[in-house]
Image (cartoon, rainbow, N blue to C red):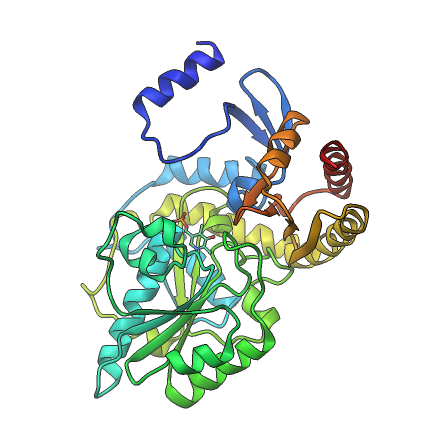
Length: 397
Ligand SMILES: *Cc1c(COP(=O)(O)O)cnc(C)c1O
């Protein structure tokens, strides 16, 4: 089938939930994607941070093939080895003591919300169930996680949504203090926001969150689905912002592009769950966990957080130069290899023009160009990226 024919046929039978670029990718290696016509692209979207170790890295292909030959799935009525191995890597490298596995980011956040509520009902004489979230947040598309997500347009047509959520402006200390009541069990936020436009949590907000957690026993839930696992230049973003979480949600990069999700929690919080309280058929299956363990080991062995810290600083410095050069660039945002450029006009045209030059970038929140390259990106590729973007900027200037 010719490309346009193929796309028309796909439109005929695939639900229309994405505004897609008319391209069909058939292959990927490291930071490169190849389309059905043989064109090569530099990928600065990185599967929206899911392909953190690059496309089809050898270590991951090998881990998946080996495990697939041995055992792909058993239910959680039984134990399996890859699940233990990945859980051990997660607890040994984070604040957490215990892990629950699922299959996506939204599922991880759904689990985090349910665990926080279970804890709130069990631990206090007056049950606590309310969860405070912040503006511009994104936590997923299930009904529960939509209640936690700020963006109103995502909720349209789905009401009534689950109750018991309060939203405060991100980094607004006073609003946070006012929103917390005797019914509040948790506060949830992304230390570095992804879909919301790469805003970082402020020190004052973190201090207030830690303070409320200590004084009133509130749980801190960090959504590190996008910013975790090396992306900001530390294994987990909470380390860099001085947050002491009780629950953390993970997905995206965790299995290098293979579907997986997890929450990590302290023992005290995790123990609110007993057999039957939560579950999922595929969660923690040997295949996904083998992919996850292989990815985690590679992130640790290659010291990806340190690499991201250095290359992120290099990238941000180069983007600062673009900001100096073009008036329409308002600011450079983000940290590590999760960065963006805020423009003073909608970014769609830039994204299209970059695509014509075989550069894949994304725009979020309307005006923020977002860059989430595979964390293994090379310096030469960063240079190529910035030079190409410079050319695009020149064209629209
Ligand atoms: C992508 C993302 C989610 C949702 O993950 P899915 O796997 O798409 O369900 C939740 N939170 C954050 C911060 C994300 O970036």
